[in-house]
Amino acid sequence: MNSSLSSRRITSSPNLGEIIYKKYLTDELAILRLKPQEGNVPDFQAGQFVTLGVNLLHHDNNKITYRAYSIASPPEEKRHFEFYIKKVREPLPGKVTSAIFNLKEGDPVYWHYPSGLFTIEEKKTDGSMETRRLILVASGTGLAPFISYILHLSNTNTRREIILLHGARYAAELGYRDLLESLQTKTQHNWNFKYIPTVSRPDHLLSTGWNGNNGRVESLLIRNNEGISRLERIVGERITPKNSFFHICGYQGTIDSVINLLTPLGFVTNRNKRTDGSFDIKIETYGS
Image (cartoon, rainbow, N blue to C red; front, top):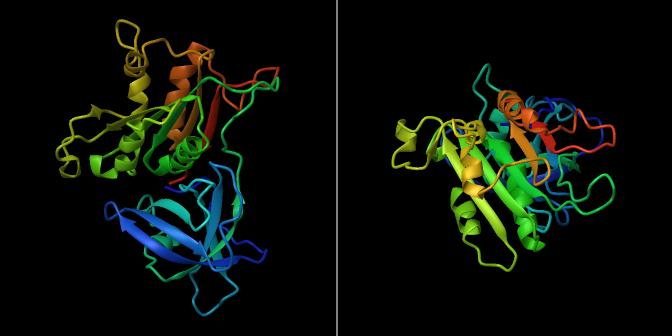
C-alpha cells in the first residue's frame, strides 16, 4: 500500500541510495531498507514519507518515476530508511511499486528528502501538551507510519497511553507482529502500549493457526447491544474526545468507516476542525 500521492516525475535533483535489506512477509508484502549513498539518514518526523524513484525507461536516465512511501523506521535510526511495501495488483498492476517491490539487495534507488504532515500531535491548539490516549488505526500497510510513531515514542520515553489497532486480510499480513508483541510486554517505566490486531479472513490458509480477533479493523470500534465496543472493553472505559485522540491510516473505506463510527461520539477530524482549530482525528489516505 502506498501513500495517496500518485506516481509522478520530480524535477529537483534526487539523492541516490542502495537497498541493503529485503524481507518477504508474503509474495505481495515486503520490508525494504534503503541506505543513503552519502551520509546518514536526514532528520525527519515520525509519520513522514520519502519519495522513491526508479527508472522505468532504462534507456533514458532523465525519466525517473517516483512514488511516496511512509517511513517505518524511527527518526532515531540514522543508518537507513525502512519501508513496508505491498505489491499492487488491482485494479491494475502499479508499475513503480512493482519495480520497487522487485528490487534486490545492492540495487540503486533514487530518493527525495522526507516530507509530510501526518505526524504526531504533541500539543493542543491552546499550546498545552497533548496527553490524551493515542489510538492508531491502520489497515494493511497503513501500519508503516505507526511503526515509526511507536518506536519513536518508545525511544523518547513517552508517558502517553498508546493503542494500535491493525487490520489485515490474513494473519500472515500482520506485518511487524513479533516486534509489536514484544513492545507490548516491554517493562520500561511509564511505557503503556497495547497491540490489537484483527484478521478479516481467518479461515484462509495464510491465517492458519490464528486465534485472535476476527473482522475488519473498524469492527473493534462497533458498540454491541450493551453499548460497549471491543476496544472499550479492553481499555475499561468509554472512548470519548476528552480521553482519546485517533490517527487513521489506510484505505479510504477504512477511514470513512472509522469516522462514521466516531462522529456520533463527538469526534472531529483534522479536515473539519472546530472553530477553535481543535480536532480529535488525524487522517492519512493510502491509495492502493
